[in-house]
Amino acid sequence: MPTKKGNPDKTAKEGNPKKGKRIFTAWGSACHSCAPSMAHGTGPPLFGVVGRSAGTCQGFPYSDAIAKSGVTWTEENLNLFLTNPKKFIPKTKMIFAGLKKEQDRLD
Image (tube, rainbow, N blue to C red; front, side, top):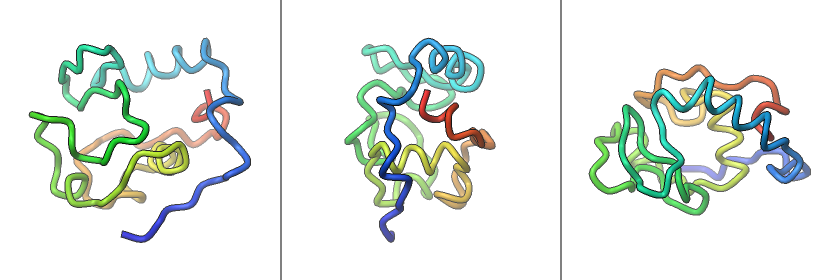
């Protein structure tokens, strides 16, 4: 898979954690957990996701698209994925349409 590029001048450090928690609660918490327990929901747990290879959380039934993507979750790749998951990894089973606002992704 080709390397995906994001905006290298923007990082999560520029985000607002309080707003980010609100955004995650609204858009991510129904399917994902950020707890260290690594419990599965409808989606895989996200604790420690930065640096992890996509599709490798033990016991979660990933789509072939995610499991075979070759993606390592970096801030850049997460930014691109969260912008439009189906464009970044075609044929993913994730139904989330994405966060179109850059500041929402930074938060």
